[in-house]
Length: 117
Image 1: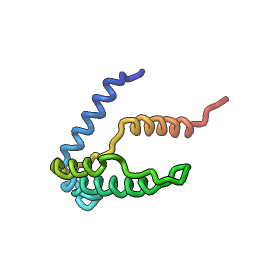
Image 2: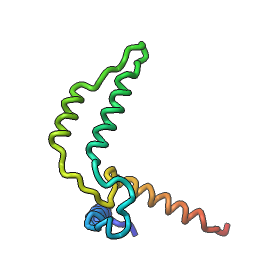
Image 3: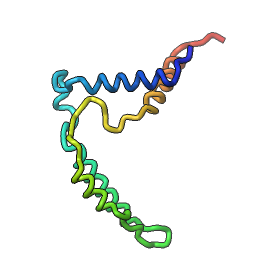
Image 4: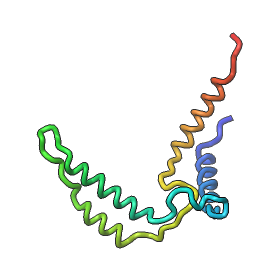
């Protein structure tokens, strides 16, 4: 029986919401990962990668250059950062990964059976 996609998405969002309610420190995860400065780390990484990309040369030997207004964007993000809050769910969670993992598990389960010919 196929489960509707809307039911699947609602279930995923519900589980994510439940994960966000868990106090990760109370279940022994306080020392796992980085629990603060998420946005400054992301901004620093973006600035670093952008600087490296700007120095890259195109097929004619010319440097690609900086992204237009990147510094304005970074300044805006730094001024308008939201409160940093650590939760169990990862910041770049993607629904597609759940489906791909599900297909992978399905394949592994099927490949472990020995079918008779």
